[in-house]
Length: 115
Image (tube, rainbow, N blue to C red; front, side, top):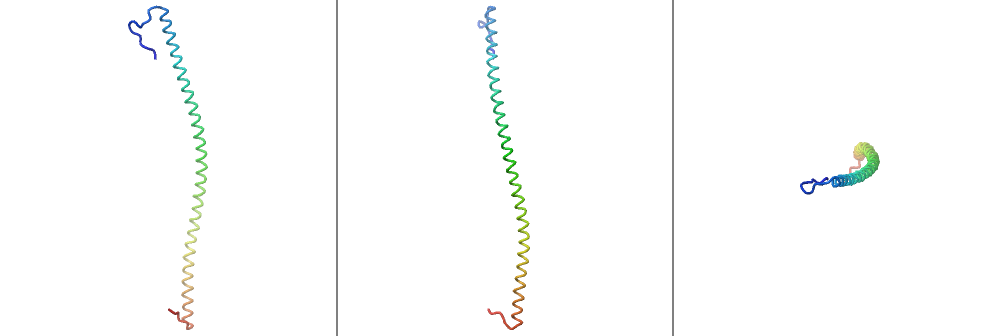
């Protein structure tokens, strides 16, 4: 930043003014160079972050594919479980009917079940 000149600090001669202006330009050039270096550093960091974000996006896409495959597998297992539940009920009913029929056959043929 250019310093504010007041009173005795102000250049008095033409050469003093030229030196003051030249120094102001040098200071401005230094500031601009620092700003440019900062912008370049930020640009490099942004590019690095963009690359990492793209890698993360690819990893996330793979994770979602695996997750969806597992989700589909659990859906199939749910269907199998529903079928197994029905088959279990049918098997239980069949076993009960078989046991009842066997008991009735024994009763009708004189073999009363013992306690």
